[in-house]
Image (tube, rainbow, N blue to C red; front, side, top):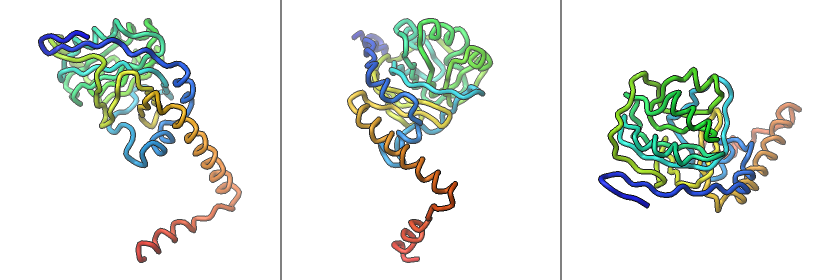
Length: 223
C-alpha cells in the first residue's frame, strides 16, 4: 500500500475464478432480488453500448475527483484478464473520465468491462470493439490529470458499494456486486428463483396462473 498527498494505491485483489464461474449467466435482477429485496444494485448507470452487454468479473476499484482521471490511468496498469474496472467519479458528467484510448488499453490487457459513475466519450468505439461499459452520462469534454484519488478501496457507484475483489455482474438491466464469500449461496438461491419464475411464465402461457395473491395482500391492508 502507498499513500501520499491524497493518493492511495492498494494492491490488486486477485480474482476467484471458481466463484466467478458460479455467477456466470445469472441476470442482475435475479441477484438483486435475492440479495436484498429491492435495495441491492445500481441506480442511474446505464449501458452505453447499443447491443446487448453483460459481464461477470473481478472488481478493480478506483475513486477520483470529479473530472480527473489520473488514478484511472494508473489502475489500467493493474488490470488483468477478467477484471472489471469500477470507478467512483463523484457522479459528475461534465468531463469524460475514459474514452477510446483507455478502453483499448483495458481491452488489450484482458479486462472485460468498465463501470463509470461519471461520464465517458468515444462511445462508438466501445460499440465497435464490443467492450461493455456502464456510465452515468456522455461528455465530449476531456478530463484533468492532477489527482488525487484512490485505487482498490471501497467505492460507491450508482448507490452501490463495491469492494476490490467483489464479483461484478452486469447486463442490460444494471449491475450488482457480490462478495466472493457469498457467491455459492447467491448462485444457489438465484438458480432456484429462476426455476420458480420459469414455472410462473409457463403457467401464464398455459392460462393456469392465479393472481389470488394480489387480493390476499389487499385484504391484509384492509381493502
